[in-house]
Image 1 (cartoon, rainbow, N blue to C red):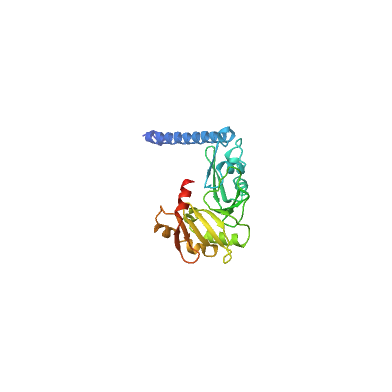
Image 2 (cartoon, rainbow, N blue to C red):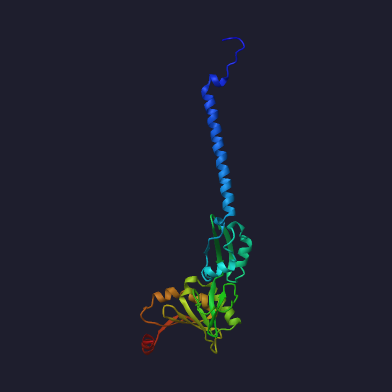
Length: 258
């Protein structure tokens, strides 16, 4: 080798140059990819592609999805990322039926609303209309025309006061399955018991009871009817002990003809 002649490492190791070139290409591809992703994001946020296209509602039982969407005040001409989730949830919670609400944007153009409602434990019948009563004791305004009471018994002959308050407290202690088995509860005070009630069950039986021991006695209702002939309807008396009296044959025939 001649003195003073410098031989580059790249010439001596050709593969090193190839590796460096490969790394540079990968770096360039990565930078270009990031650039195009950034451009695509900007275009998405600025274009109608990010505008609210659909609103999905979950968790509602009593309030319709349409009502909740209306309460949310979400406009379909704005980006889902510009929806104020806190303000929207607060708008929905203005309805006294709603216990909690959460609002979440869903890529690419949807909004998901999840609500939790107060349980309706009964409906108070007033002048042919039905006012829902919530688990917290609040009595709401009457249902709109065309709306029907569901998932809770209808209370007939009650007014706001001690008798209604006691009944609601006792109803709230019962399992949901038993609450749902009651169709109507009539306030039927007697000389000896101002809290006496008559309940009409969805299975055709009638129950005579008192609000004072309702939760204590009605908890046994499924066991009681399991021992009865489902074809023979009658009154189950739970005021003191518990006994069954079949309807008069003439009454049963009249009911069947109706």
